[in-house]
Structure formats: structure tokens, C-alpha cells
Picture 1 (cartoon, rainbow, N blue to C red):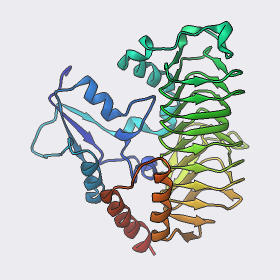
Picture 2: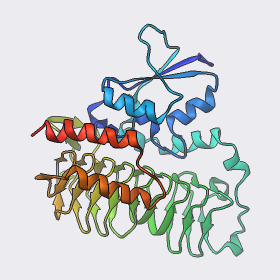
Picture 3: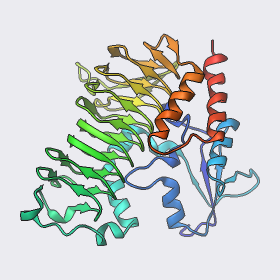
Picture 4: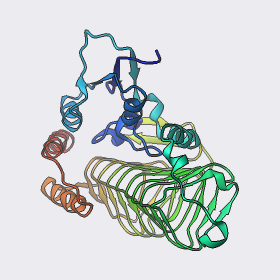
Length: 351
């Protein structure tokens, strides 16, 4: 139906692979190439009422508190459109970066109209490929010595982003609002959310809003949630020595990615220390703080130091509030209440 009056975001049958990524945000909140799914639905269907369905009452309370205009699902109401998270598996999204960027351009016509007038000879930066596939917001700051390569896809540099000298950026690529990209090599198709700080080498990865990977180290074929910090020289492996299919372990479950290239899946509010090596297919669940020299397999929620202990709740909340305050954002009361509830469920009751 072209203009549905009711849309259901059905989060009740979430794929196991999305569980760590979806403990604090739902898939419809992820910023992918400048838009969330919710944002796209509101633009495409402004008259539609949007409903939400989830089996976890604590999570549903969190979502409905965060979005007062979303309505709780009524089982007796027939929905004209239903969207679900099946198409949001990280390895599937990584293969559709070009499509997501082109969709963003089609939705936001201003990115095509309000772009910097590029003066190749006087700008100080260089473009390999077609200039028309580079979309620089008028407020973006590009230092001399930056190289943009649009040969394999478009590049969008959004509002107030800053790209410093000696960065190499290859399309398809989206750099979000307020980002700082410093002496980085970003290759192979990536999506960087708003207010991220990125340096070192990144390949075919998705970083959501307010995440930092600001120093040297390799991040490849990975999905990194919001409010994650990856320390200097921390590195992911995204290919097994035998070139085998990458399988993830999430709790007691095994998830087959169907690809030979997948690095790490990192959930919200996790911190990876300096020099940590993450083996192929590493999964780091919500709120972990890991400093061990090598991490492999699955790290359960609120893992501490080497994964054998748990982050204390009071310390986690205190640290999280300080980190968010650095970006002038406060942890809301309903979010703190939710974290306390999920900590009790995943840590206290699990021991």
C-alpha cells in the first residue's frame, strides 16, 4: 500500500544475532547513512500512526518513553504495514552500503542542492573518480591533503564534519554530522554515525552515533553500536586463517554469518582498551569494559577486564554519565531505570 495509515514496528521476533545490539536501542533507531528507519517512515508516510510491539516489557517501556509519539501495539488492530528486524543483520547491511547512501540522497534532496562548490585546484584536497559523486555539506571542513575516491561509490560528508589532512576516504561512504576524521584510511564501504571520532584504518564497517575509534588500529567488517570507545592500536581480525565461514557465538547459540569476512560485533556502552586484539567473529555484549590483550568468542553483558568478572552497576552508571556529559547529553531517568532492570536480569539473576 502506497500510503498506509498504520505501521507496526514488530520487534517481537528479534534474530539472535541482533540481541547484543538491541539491548539499549531497537533496530529502527540505528542511524544508517543519515537516517533511522523511524525517520524514513515519518518522511515517507507522514500521516501514518506508528505502533511498536515487543515481548520484553522493560524494553517496550524504554522505547515508548523515548518516543512518546509511538503507540503501543493493539493486538486487535489490523496493521497496513509491518516492518521487522530481519533485514538488519550486520553482514547484510554491510553489503548494502551503496543502496543505503543512495536512499539517503533520494530522501534528502538538500544533500544534492546544498553542497559545497568544489574548486579542485584551490581546495587543497583531491578527488579520484567523478566529482559529482562527492557530497560535501557547506559547513563541512576539509583540510588540505585529504583524498576522496568515488570510483566505487558516492561519498557524503554531512553537516559540521571535519576531515583532517592525510585522510583517505573511499566510497561508498557516509560520514555523519559533527564527526572528526583524523588521519584515517576508510576503505571498502562504511557508514559512520553522528558525532563519531575516527582515525586509523576502517574497512566496510558500520559505527553508530557517539562512538570513538580515534587512533591507529584496524577495524574491519564490523558493526559497532553507540557510545563505544575503542582504544589506540586495538585491532579486529575479519578473516579466519582457513578462509572459513565466520560463525558467531551469542550466549549458548551459534549464528552463521554466511560470509568469510566478519570482524567484531560490539554492543552499546562497551569500552575496548589500548592494544586489544579481537579475534574473527568476536561478540562483545552490552556495557563491557575489556582490557585483556586478546578477546575471542562471546563476552557476556557488563563483562569486566578479562570477561571473567562483571562491571559493578554503580561504577557503570557513574562512568556512563561522565562519558555522555562530555557530549552534553544526559542519561535520562527512564534509561537509567531500564539499565538497572536489565542489569538485574542479565547479571544478578544470572549468577
